[in-house]
Image (tube, rainbow, N blue to C red; front, side, top):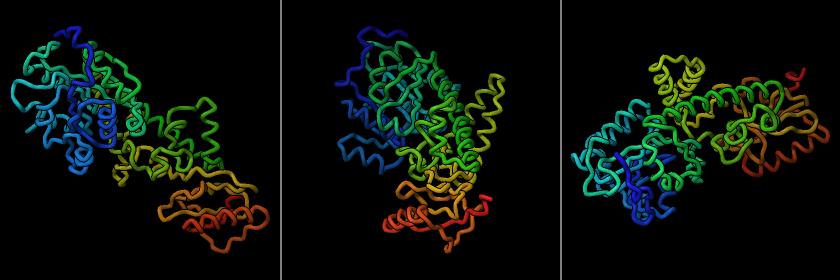
Length: 406
């Protein structure tokens, strides 16, 4: 199957794009395509999400089949292999309208296993196109998972890892660059999702390593804000430490700053690790770190944190606390190994940070005491800042750390 030169560019003005899957990632990806000037039609199982697009004048269809009938290119962004197969091959799916299809290009940005991706691509290529497209006789499929998370999806700075025919990738590159800033051609069909699984495997293990180091540092009396400076100026620097810090109160705009909501969920990470282990088994490769990481994220899901961002392991597996800041007199706002007469904090009703000081999420090591005396200059500073927090609607918690310092 070849593509003629006139098919190497996808014109924004005439190309009709169907987008299916408007979750945390897909919502922003579809929005960026619309903002870039593409004619977009959408579908999602959530009527409320589709309403947000229809209120903007964007056509929202009830089924994937209806999207396919009015599109030249289809992009899917779905949670799992079963969701992808249902959207493509299920009743009223993308391939349910007979042997002839309107879309000439299908792009799946979901993270699924390479074998399913290859089988689905082979199935798509057996269909015929409605009318003469000029650049292909049969529909073509690319696997194009992404990296960068929700912040990058919103900012339009995603990285796409693409598998499939290289000339098709080159033709579709303007589409990818409307949603991201990097495109990497990974080779044949299925190689895009294979690269994504390797990427997420490394990301999961990195998150666990960084979270473990932060939690240990806090136990040794080092605030996470200080340790972050060390990491990002030293050999431990990585994407987790400088762009996706798991410690609440250290970095703005990341899931840890919003109670681990609106990110890449622990459930999805456990799913991707399962896929990575299955792919490794197929080729006889042992990956013990991946297995251990999966056990931890499975535990997070079992304990009710599956919908929280995967960085929540810092708090809910390692019992880490908020980042905090160093106070005069040896007091550590993180509450670990304080050397003064007490450690204070004030928190809102969600236990969230107020004015940059850190809540204590795991109080098993401390006994709340309302009559702890903190005197001198340090005491004046503490009570002045605390008063500001109370006026902001917070709650005062005082912990006696004298025993810990001995």
